[in-house]
Length: 553
RNA sequence: GCGCCCGUAGCUCAGUUGGAUAGAGCGGCGGACUUCUAAUCCGCAGGUCGAAGGUUCGAAUCCUUCCGGGCGUGCCA
Image: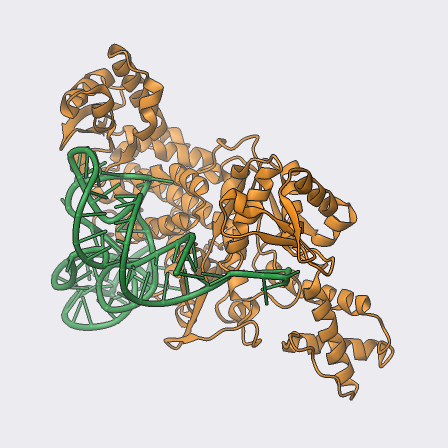
């Protein structure tokens, strides 16, 4: 509905511009068509006259009047258009016209909300990407849910999406991990071998060591580092994958640093940067001259030891990604964000489109328990793992809370609230709405109501204010999905589902005024149609966020 | 010092990318279950949108400065 109207408005603006010998395409940028906030402002409003006033050198209200007559009745869907305020044009749909959305929702069912705008575009979402040095912690959890929901949104808007997990398995970090496991192993066998100074202190490595003792006794005391590394990496990765599985997250591709070395991509990347004249040597190290891109400082690509820093393979990796997909979206925490501009600048220097490398930044999660903030530190091994929280609050609440807020704001995760099965907990409010809708449908079926074809349902009977409100909300859904996908802001979906649930609860609580199943069969049929549309939309939104839509609670 | 992110109701946050009278949830107070699920709903109270300037028809939103918080600023990943 909005789409149809918008194209009418655009056409009208074009005619208006042509009459004044102006280039329409240059004027359309700021023109919007938004759902009105209050009924007196009609169903939709456009700011077109206000935006055009300056470039066309005309009074906004005059342009607005002209626009109104240009629009006419929009092929019968417009009852009237009014100029209001400084020059807004408020559009009032003909009675019943906007109820058409109900037929559409029922017809499309599970597909309602999906769109094809991204068709043919390959997008990679690279997320989690935690190195296999320990279990996933709460920060990774936010990253995981954010990335997964983003990927889902892009799929829902027609993009061809790859979920990818990249990890470093070639650097110093993994050697420290191997040494840490060796030390734990030796300790279990009664040897006095301390952990490396910057070793991994977590209990999980002791468990890996214990399994080694059980399997091989002291047979690994002389094993070399690579054996310990492989063992640690495999064990830890198995744990990470199990956690992701609990979260309902599946990756299409796991890629790693080592392969980039083995295939010569890292060397080639360095050679090409050198050919581009962006590299110099100093103090025995190889530097990227990133100040030439306006960045703060130059950075080391190859240490004086001859080993590459993490930056170089990262550049090679992004280059490789863009051979496979048109766009890549990196989901990164604040600890990684500093390096991002360097990767992007280097990619541009290598002839790649920097716009094709996008960043979704998220801020840290503060855990709150008993009203107190829980202190966390990876170095001290005093982190809280995703598994612990999942044991506590379950997957649905975890996913909802992680996606509820904008990514770039700090997130307060109140564990007590997430665990609560009460009216304070928004995720249950949404699920409860879905369960209630299902309950009404069950009751209707028991009483012999048959689900009529969408075309024959008398939706014109739905005239109560609360019904109008619900239908308007339903109408927004596809547009909302498109916007959330485009803006990379999945929290908009969570917010919407909460709004829709609240509106439904308010509707159904006023059962005296609009009981769904009643004496009037026609009215009941219309309301059941509304119920079906609400249920489908809630279910679609929840599915997009990876949250269950229970039929009973 | 420099860079990035953030400052909106007592608390946690929205605000469709510059639109009309700034909204939710929680917490507080007061109400509603012979009802298709009260895991819900209805009402009340609560704001100089961190501060000051600027841009324009119009600013919580954009620009500048300042204040406050987070993160980063390694030949660590």
